[in-house]
Amino acid sequence: MDFADLKKAFAPILEALDHRTLNDIPGLENPTAEHIAIWIWDKLIDDFPSMTRIELSETPSSGVVYRGK
Image (cartoon, rainbow, N blue to C red; front, side, top):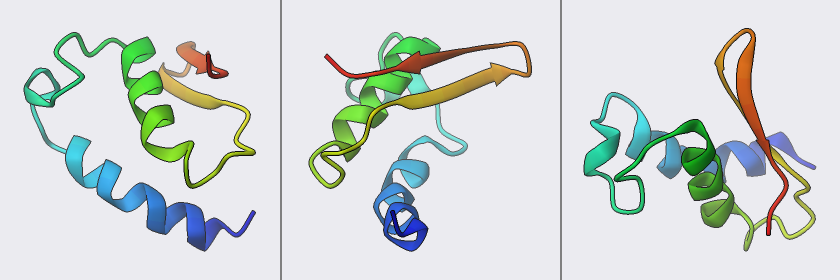
């Protein structure tokens, strides 16, 4: 995968999440790590159909791995 392509596709997602009140974002009214990972997956899967997982860390010792539906 070309990481420039991933960076370009992720830029609007980062913009939507960074320094925002997550509860105010449609689809993230309950912004747990699990829900955020699913939300990001849903935004990227059409551009990256071979994507196998999203990993999201809350702290160095806790997080979530989402592998799709």
